Amino acid sequence: MRRTRILISGASIGGPALAYWLDRYGFEVTVVERAAGLRPGGQAIDVRGPALEVCDRMGVLAGIRRRSTGLRGMSVVDDEGKELFSTTDWTASGGDIDSPDVEILRDDLAAILFSAGGNGIEYLFDDSIASIVQGGDEVAVTFHRGAKRSFDIVVAADGVHSSTRAMVFGPEEDFLRHLGVYLGVWTVPNYLELDRWQVIYRTRGNAWGGMVMSVRDNTEARVFIGYNSDEPPTRVLRDSTVSDRKRLVAEAYADAGWEMPRMLEYMWGAPDFHFDSVSQIRMDSWSRGRVTLLGDAGYCGSPLSGQGTSMALMGAYVLAGELKAADGDHTTAFAAYERELRDYMTDHQDFALSNKERMDARMADDPAMLSPEAMADGRAEAKGLVNSYTLKDY
Image 1: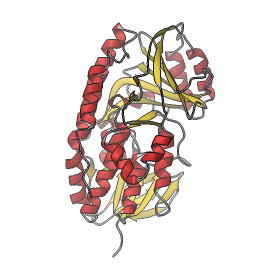
Image 2: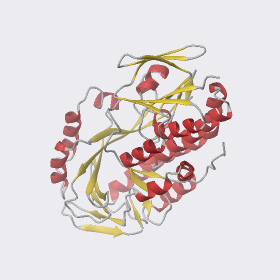
Image 3: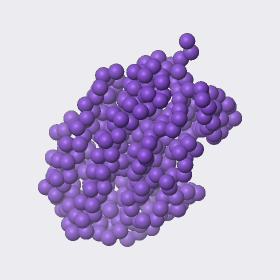
Image 4: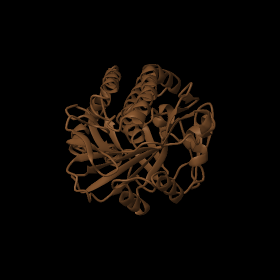
């Protein structure tokens, strides 16, 4: 009997994780990725709660821990570089130091998940889906490089701005909820000689501030910035070039102090510069016919949830498991997938909204708002949500 053929669009986090499980369960798996290879750069991301168990069951948790950021703590500075406070109890990006959670660079995690999949998975790099036509028994897919193929199921794991989702469900603006913030990330030399340390530069007004942290055994550093803007992503991002987006960051931080001028100089030559809106995707349904959504494409919580990566890993595990349990019957599997995870994902999206309200209020009043004491309520709420789900066995 012919194996169920599944096409996954996107090779960042959710796509390779789903491919691993589907291949293990005996499905025929193809992953298509627009980039020429695994994409470099991106945020420091967290693997938490049930997602740690997913990685353990994949056999990659030890490797993830070895490549974690390994931060010892953080400090907050003002325009002149004066330290407002420091702590070795937690970091702004990774949470409590003594937590079992793992903070790792997005591109490092993607490489680990990709390698875990083995040779049974077909990867098509430097290509993407140009069109999808659903029939009663299969999905006809045309790729941008010209190939035409048929699949039984298509999974969109291509991010918050998923082009696959747009083809099947409609335009992005119908589902994207912009949270009024834009985020930029790029790599710089570790010229501050940070030793597994994170420094937050606090500003007042429109800009959220800057953050720099040493990564990869202190051999380099990643810079993160944010600024407020209600301009819709369709206007800011559509048709803009990388240079256009770097210019937006430079303008937002034109009057910044501390080390930001030098970090902006590095930004202009950074090949891994990433810039995007802080947004959520809210869908009434994650599936339509033989096409379903995974991770940010279907239920992006935004970086303010602290759970985007874990949500994608959990989604991959559950979706693959339900397809296995349903013997490839997409109708049964998709319904079970959504029934299993809908409340969990929505709770984390709602947490991101309340988290932003807390952060906005404190930023306006207190440049030391990132102290452990000031963030205790949000951290406690996050812990409860993260551990509110127990993985099923498939």
